[in-house]
Amino acid sequence: MERGYVQIYTGDGKGKTTAAVGLSVRAALAGEKVFIGQFIKGMKYSELSLPNYIDRIVIEQFGRRCFIKNNPESQDLEAARNGLARAREIIIGREFGVVVLDEIFIAHYYRLISTEDIRRLISSKPEETELVLTGRKAPSEILDEADLVTEMKEIKHYYSAGVQAREGIEY
Image (cartoon, rainbow, N blue to C red; front, side, top):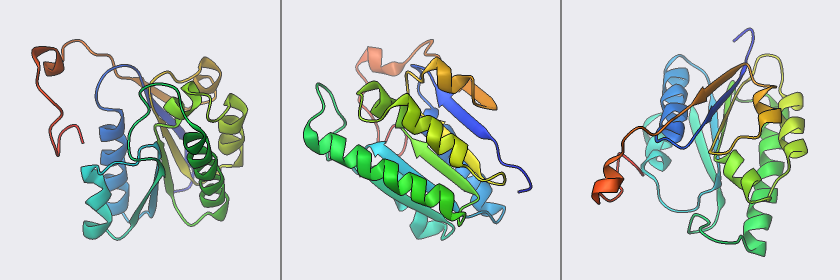
C-alpha cells in the first residue's frame, strides 16, 4: 500500500472483531501480511485458526483465559503491557502491511493502557501501514485522530431471547 490509514471499529453492537477479521482476510488475499493482536482475549476463538489457512496472517493474544468481567488483576495489566510492547515492535518493524489491535479500547477502558499509549502507537505507524483498532468505548481523543470510524450500534440481538454465543459466529 502506498498509504495506510487508521481505522476504528467501536460501539456496543456486534461486529467489531468480525469486521477487522474480514478486512484482514481481504488484505491477506490481496498479498498483504497481516498481524492481529488481541488485547484482553485469551480464550479460544475461531479466528485463531486463520494462520492455518492463510499464511500471511499472524495472530497473537494478549490476555488471560477469561475476558475481564469485573476488576482487572495484576496479570491482566501485565498481559496488556506485554501486548502494548509487542504491538509497538510490530508497527515499528514494518513487516506487516495491516496491523489489527483487537479490543485495545477495552484494555483502555479497564485502565490497562492509557490514551497516550494508543496515541504513541498511532504516531509510530509508518505511512504505508494500515492500523485497525477495535473495541467498545473508544475515547473521543482517539476517534479524532482516526481516518475512518465505524460505530456498531445494537438495534436488536438474539442474546436477549436467550441465544448463547455460537462457535464460528460470536467466537
